[in-house]
Length: 480
Image (cartoon, rainbow, N blue to C red):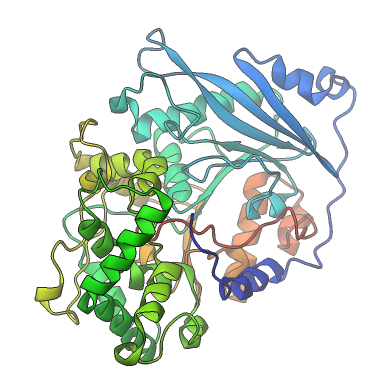
């Protein structure tokens, strides 16, 4: 959907190679003398009631399964219908720890290994979030899309697989997936042995977003901020000619604007995402790339302004076709998660007609929505006072980290770390040396590996360039 950023590749290489390439694989004994060890793992998985195979894909050193699991639409009333939820299993060995991953959206059906899975040299179970197709009930009762129901999906999957994968479990996820891992821990705190939540926003009070405004006055350098602000402003100054270009682009691609209401609303939404989108997915060094960000917005051509905004924000997103796959996210943002609102003091009011629009504008009107202000306050309070074996990792230059989770005096063996200079792709490998060692050691300890491995504080599995994808997953800008 989005144009790939050429300058994002440098970040991918940087994160993918940080400190992990030379790590040694731990050799631990395989389970022997048990019924589980004697039975093929596929047969064990398919013996679970409600589990069915979609496909198995080969990957050296692993077995990779794409599966459907039958879930209740409403965990409070299991008799009132079911749906098929897609999960994947990257199987290494039943004697290894297991990492439970969710990105909070669709699940990838390509074998991949998240950072904690590489660190503990374990198995990985990945879950597609409910209501993201094809894991959507039919008909869809949207009132059953909430954080408790999703946490209950995870709890039920964990219980079904724990008899096979009996060693320690760690949950993880990035962005909305980091939020998901946190909510799961809040509602089912006895399931996991540890939690690693990456770049997880924490919008406790939906109507109080001054932290984001403060973030944008300090992030990066003044020179870069001014350069980005100028392009964003110029795109609004030139709204008339660039909207004509947008209309032609939409007609050529068959894009419509029924959900958001008009091409004009969509245009402004894309432009207002521009600065946020840059810091979410780019590094400070990318600001000097004149091929992406015109150095002088006022003298730039219309095409240069268009291409810059399209590359960073993406003009296809606020169309009906771009919004539709993310309806479940915007529904949750407008009912429980909250959504940021920021101001643009460097743009005259006459150029801004709508401002940051609420999630309600991105969900079809046929779907009812009512915000629940207590949902995030409850989670935030629980984390501050009850976090146990939880690690939160943020990027210094990631806007979503402006409102973050924090741990208080009641928390035990829990940490909040910030990776210097990094964005929405921040991870343990990007932390300072001391914090990286501490975080790695804690993950290994929670996974229940040998004491010597914990002391060494290094990933147990060698870095695999194909399996260990470390680039930030580029999604629509104003979305975690």
